[in-house]
Length: 395
Ligand SMILES: [Zn+2]
Ligand SMILES: [Zn+2]
Image (cartoon, rainbow, N blue to C red):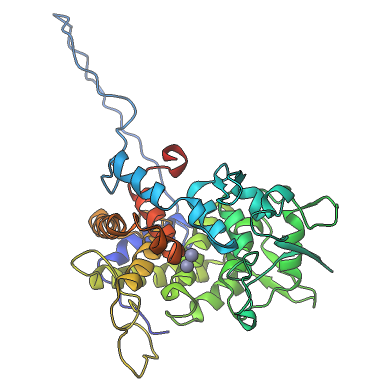
């Protein structure tokens, strides 16, 4: 991975390192007291305006009318989701109380029921999405070798469902249905994932699930007795290329962002590794700030000038869909960063405005939304986060 040069972002990154405990300093409190000054006598009582004791909330990064937000959420509603990955995306956007209407029966199903395999919910995807294993239970994952099959019951990436449930704060004690009348909970899925954990392949969703559900434990042990730590995980994530993984390599950055956020609460990573992550994130943000298109978007190969192994065919041909994938995903992980590391409000607002105009032009077309459900959901979610709007309140 090529080293990144830092400029004006460095002092802010240093501030963050201090707040994360990567360095320790001793602060001395000094208090001043004015001697010999007496209050002047009050000669008249006047009405005075008193400043509010609570500081005014900063305005949202993106000004988003309720009407626009509502139109985007309605255009991205859950009944456009055609498979497990779609339902997981809808769940992330709409929250754990959201429902989806089955077009065939006209019946409404709770999205969370569909995802955790409750009998009522599994009607909609035709089979049970979870099966029992030696170490607990597992979500079915999409298999490329079975392209001819529908596989509506399968998550797109190993660990995807567990990562989404963790991000939504669904506890490990939440009941799931594995189809054999046993009483199992999400913990069975977590145990199976940990037992089979290895630091290879498409790691990002398993990694997010461990960061969400693992702390305060700082290590985990797989079925071969191999012990892993958050330091090991961070080193693996930092060692990978910028374009590694789906969605333009943005899931690796999302993992690092949630790891540094969880570290601030649970102290998961050693000081030198925290410094490495902060340096890497500050450099990546700096790169995104300088390469943002004047319209506000980023290209799908946003990493091109950073990567040590550039594709022989040169840069990818820019497409609206590639920009939607990259820009929606980037805004989501950038908003997970501490204020000291985030790009300016202006950079984020321009990305948000670009996303709004792209979505507004397309979300009235249900076929386009259904075909591009993943990037549409990420982009809608990014817009709502920037505008501080909640899909649950808009539904
Ligand atoms: Zn993605
Ligand atoms: Zn996605």
